[in-house]
Length: 169
Picture 1 (cartoon, helix red, strand yellow):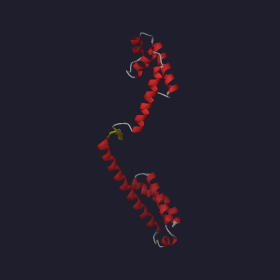
Picture 2 (spheres, helix red, strand yellow):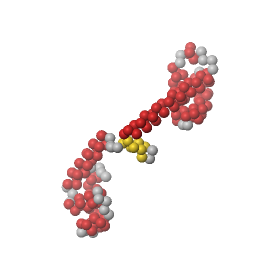
Picture 3 (tube, rainbow, N blue to C red):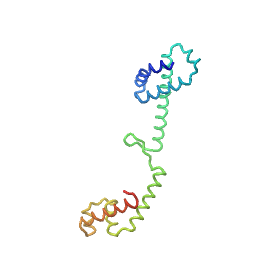
Picture 4 (cartoon, rainbow, N blue to C red):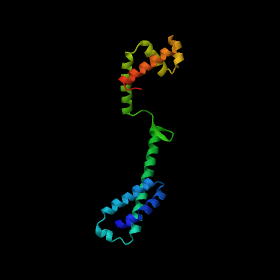
């Protein structure tokens, strides 16, 4: 039986790939056929009168199971999306971050806030105006009454400090 499997393996993969639309999924099905063949006893394998048909029958049943599972998964995912999220670019997006992501973000924010406490007031203000308010270097320079070169030095100093102390941005 194993010899027939090995001989027919490429044809099995092609056949199931055509039905599934995926060579990778077909390879998985053919691998599952092999696992099932290994589970057969010698006596039950000897009783199989048409080994090629037997292989295709096992594979066909596995393909059917895979298609049913895909449909169940799609229905479940669609129901979840409708009740708890939205879709952006074809991907489900939760309305809020996961608890782990929220905790990580709070931790990073605390670390950044502590690191900014020790920064010179003008440098801290320049950083906030740039990163939070979105002002350009020229706008910050005008608001603080300094040159754009000074603003660039403030920002690069703050970013270097944050990178050193917090690993951010």
